[in-house]
Length: 249
Image (cartoon, rainbow, N blue to C red; front, top):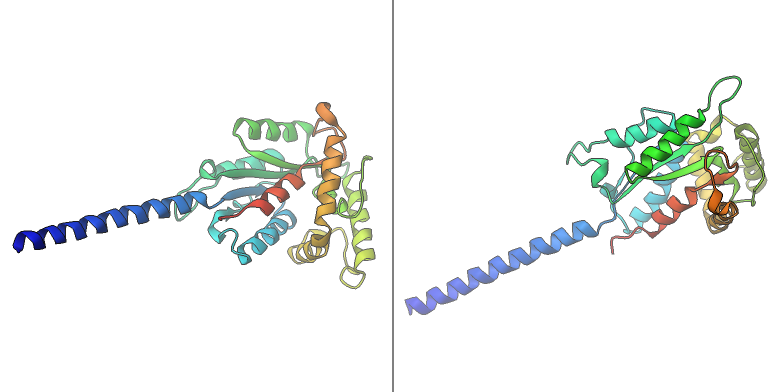
């Protein structure tokens, strides 16, 4: 009887060990299945807020988790510096660096230098592109500015446009779309967190058209596309499409 009881106990404990191993394996697989992404942005309000709005919807729909999306601390406002912000990131809780994320992106503007100050050199922009490629980091760039992505929600644009004209065009389109919501919109407030949230809500229903316009615009340059010189152009839609596809299931 003792031997039979012992055998039963051994089988029970063996089964428990196997179950524990299976549970651990499943938990590991679940963790590996969670799509994680890190995005470093050139500005500290409009682009980060825009992408947080997309991710917020995915979290609410339980498609991704809060911990699977990270925007590094914002320390630089030039393209090459944005890449450095990505490289410098280290999660406080886990010690995780950008290298350990499945998806790694920077969001930058060509933003040509202006007479009164501001903007970036072509060298800085190109250095960011080449550095990102070397590190296997994807780039959502805009020539000339991030707001080109906003404009493409309303119209297809394939003629050159610089920042000030671009901002005024976007402001005009938003006021026409929802005059009460955007009556006070100007070039300063358009980049604020609060206004970006309102803009996102307005543009969401037009997103499919914007993706189509951005895709068409990029294809128009064919194989000789130069992100630094080709105005207008953008790859923001590629990041938006990726975020829309992220799913833990």
